[in-house]
Image (cartoon, rainbow, N blue to C red; front, side):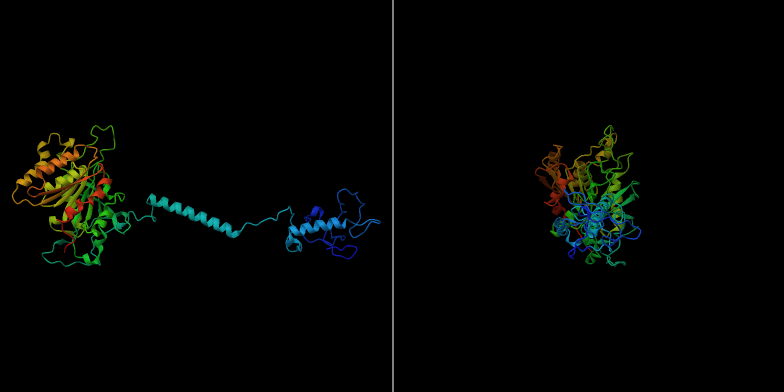
Length: 459
């Protein structure tokens, strides 16, 4: 720092109010650094005449070395704007040119926070995508699921007259399809029917009570749920969007329903809705053994129940077996109970057909009559000592087929509550021909109607 002639401290001169761009400390003004030229002459304030060149520290005769007041004002402004630099130590870091605003260093913490947030956001999006496309480890789909073991493990000793039937085996290979909020599993297996010879998928579900230790020796009732439409390659009751499984758990907690095991097989051997130009579009198998066709009747009433007996604790008698279905699945459910009352006790038929109407029956009238619910009901009413069966119908008053409700009402008027056939009908206000309509309305009467006559859990 230089001194003025009156021995007062004077701030070093900076051309245009800036620090010089030397990387190292400079010697006092007026001195000379080794190997470097001496600083040149001072520039006078604007409007003054250029002074002859002279070394700093010298004074021209008859006039001051520089305008003291102008320079003091300049230094004061500079120090007020950047006070922390007034005692700037040039030996610690190189100077910079001041352009009116102090350069800022971005906060390292702020950069890390932004980077971390970005990583978390990307990870969240990636996990959602992987969950949607069912990519492990973000989903347990495809994991093995076993329903055959009893809680706590080990064999269960039963009384000779026990109503429950322990799993007979062999155990099927079930893969998890989805896990419900209550921890229960929807699982799927591929079954080759020993009696029908048909190979297809079957989805299964057990309520949480099934794994309750207090039911370790108990058999549970089975409901075989059949879809409408193509019913292939999937059974839409296995989809959690319809909330069939959650509804059964809810109804059981409310005392309306049994804690049913669910079996959800494919209904037809192929998807007949694929090609709109197909002349046989809309063909289906009526849940029956049509000559020359896959034996879907045997598949539904023999092979699927056998699968449940092999892998679950079930009930030996017909009191633990029922069907539920909508549309063509409702027809197949109704027909199965009427044709095999010694095997099945009840059915919920939603928006069903009442007569077989598949085009595949052509040329097979006798076999068609053997699968006609009207004729089966007539024979059951006339049969002495026939077992009681219970049919809960539900039909919307806005079904797309306007004949559905009149046909059901006619069937009930003819056969309902006569002899061994017991029926009830729920007409759904504003109800349409779809599963979304049928599931919640099952809790408004139909599920109670069949649950009151069925057993389970029982030992």
